[in-house]
Image (tube, helix red, strand yellow):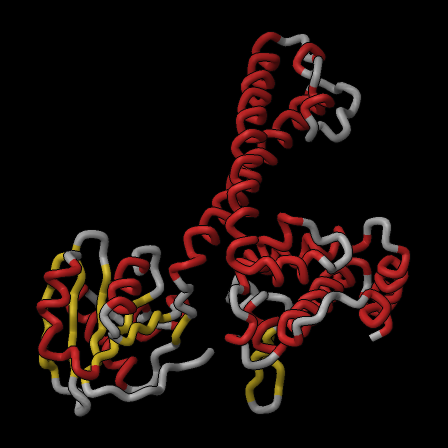
Amino acid sequence: MPYYLVKHQYTCGVDLHGRNLYLCVLDRDGEKLLHRRVGCDPRRLLKVLDPFREDLVIGVECMFKWYWLADLCADNDIEFVLGHALDMRAVHGAKSGNDRMDAERIARLLLGGLFPYAYVYPVGMRSTRDLMRRRSFHVRRRSDLFNHIQMKGLQANLDPFGKIARPSLREGLKERFSDPAVRCSVEADLSLIDLYDVVVERLEKSILESAKAHDRHALSLLKSVNGVGDVIALTLLYEIHDIQRFESVGRFLSYSCLVRCKKTSDGKVKGVGGKKRGNLHLKDGFSEAAVHFLRGNAKGQALHSRLVKKHGTQKALGVLAAKLGRAVYFMLLRNTPFDLDRFVTA
């Protein structure tokens, strides 16, 4: 976990809420110069911070409300640092706490070089990334409806429905249920699925248009990987954003939740941790890419068979996903398309 180590004349910790925030401004020696609550009014906030604007850094915990404050700081040439919420244990693990105490703790972590920082995603692509995540949310809800219909079929001991993702495969489906109440439940599911189909298609079209405007070349590089189509490529593109922000391939794989992080003490392995510490959207993207990579890909299937012999069936697909993550890192770093022959022999 990287820490923010740059020193400034003034350090400001912010405990941010929906309608107000609590400020704590420290000087280089750690003396409190300002400690007060302010409403979430940009003009009011800038006025309060005006005496310290010469060399000021603002630290905020990474919660869903930080967008407007990051943009305000960027527009006014104020250094902004986003704190990684899971690693700010000095704030969350304290015996007691309130807004005033939390703001001071954040400021002192930042001043002392112990502030674990997260990536401040730029405003230009942020809304499209969030739209992509929202599209994934709707797809999962649609999948839940498909699963519910399949479950109702099993309860009624009906013949398997097979894949019913396409509208043409769902014709006459509700009539297969004899119970009126169950038929009504399935009909409601099918109506929602039809609506989700329209919504998801509209979102995908909008996201793809935005992606071509943002980075058409990176999108084409990602789609050069066998089995990676528009949706997976868009997921990887918007979750990675800039490959240069990862100083090594190990950092990238760790951020993508594709490697295990060992915990050692006195030379002994005490276990693994942080399985969910990172970008789970990237992990899902690479996991899905690994599955699609094997479809109709004889060389990829041969590689998977070797991985199964070495690691076992359950672990092989995860190893393949990590291998794809490593390949994508160097593809984007070196600006080169995917090389299948090199990938399966490396």
